[in-house]
Each structure stands twice: as structure tokens, then as C-alpha cells.
Amino acid sequence: MLNIVLFGPPGAGKGTQSAKLIEKYQLVHLSTGDIFRANIKGGTELGTLAKSYMDQGQLVPDEVTIRMLESEADKSPDAQGYIFDGFPRTPAQAKALDQFLASKNTSITMMLALEVEEDELKKRLLLRGRDSGRADDVDPAVIQKRIDVYRNETEPVRDYYQAQDKYTGIKGTGSIDEIFERLCAAIDSLVK
Ligand code: AMP
Image (cartoon, rainbow, N blue to C red):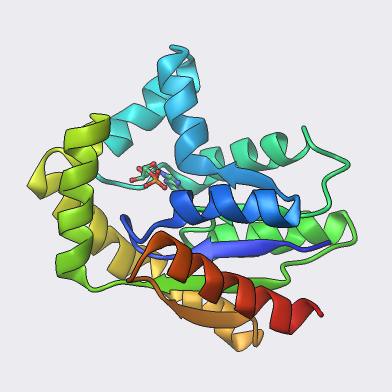
């Protein structure tokens, strides 16, 4: 299996690149943010809970997030591999993911981390807020909070994979196709 953690701060382009990568490598896309948004739209209890955190730019608690991710992954038992987008966001989530994959006799192949400067992130998020109406992309204070949460709570996840020698940094600026080519080159050099 090819199991990729696509990592990076909010606005780094994880969703955009995931859509291209799943097509090329025939992977299943697991985006915890997308699953939370689908639950909000569907008016589920999980959606109501998640929204209370998302609107503040804070992380949804690990236990809820991990359980949701695992049940979503279990919906595609025949997958050739997964792209984890926006997950894991804490070291506890990363450990839980390792255990979950080990129980399926597989593991994370690599982490690809999109690197983008903070000023550029803020520009992209405000644009997305204007175009998509995503609630957490509209308010500059919430955007700042999400970037701060990323630095404080999520960046340690990078060290977790670095310690396993699974980390690759990818320049996340340039055209969508240029960034995609860098990601594919990193995958192909490892997998072939
Ligand atoms: P995203 O679409 O990945 O930018 O996520 C939007 C929001 O959903 C985040 O700001 C968090 O509130 C929540 N969220 C998404 N993924 C996770 C996760 N792995 N752990 C905790 N909260 C998450």
C-alpha cells in the first residue's frame, strides 16, 4: 500500500493537491476537515460538536477525531492506499494512526510536507473565504488562531515522522502543476 500523510499549515494546498494525487495514484482521500464539514452540513451530532471547535480555529478533540478517521478508513477496505489530509494534527493522532495501520498490516509510507510562508497562507485563506464562503476562512482572527494552533500543536507531528525517516519537505509555492510535479517526483523516487 501507498499511505501518504500530506502535511502543511492551513492554506498550504493540501486539498488541491490531494485531489490530483488520488487520481494519479488511485488512492482513497481521507480529509478530516472535509468529513467534519459534511457532518455539519448533514446536521449530525458530530457536526455540531466539531463546529464549536472549528469556528474558533481550534482542534476538535483527539478522541473524537481519531474514532471518526478510523471508521471512515474502514469504509474502503480494498483501498490500494490512503492520502491523509489534515490528519494527524497532533502526536497522539499520529501514534493512533500508526497503531490503526499496524492492525491492518500496513504503515505510513511517507509524509510530504508542503512549505509555504505565513504571509502567503493568510492571503490564500482570505481569498478562499471570499470564494468558497468557508466560515473559518473569513475572519482574520480565526485564520491567525489556526496558524498558531498549527505551529504549537501540529508541527511536532513533523518531528514524529522525521524520527522515522519518513519526512520530505516540498516547496508549496508556484503553480498548482509545478507543486504537483514536485510531489510526484518525491513519491516516485521512493516507490520505484
Ligand atoms: P481543514 O479543512 O483541514 O483546514 O480543517 C478545518 C478544521 O477542522 C480545523 O481548523 C479543525 O478545527 C478541524 N480539524 C480538521 N482536522 C482535524 C484533526 N485532524 N484534528 C483536530 N481537528 C481537526
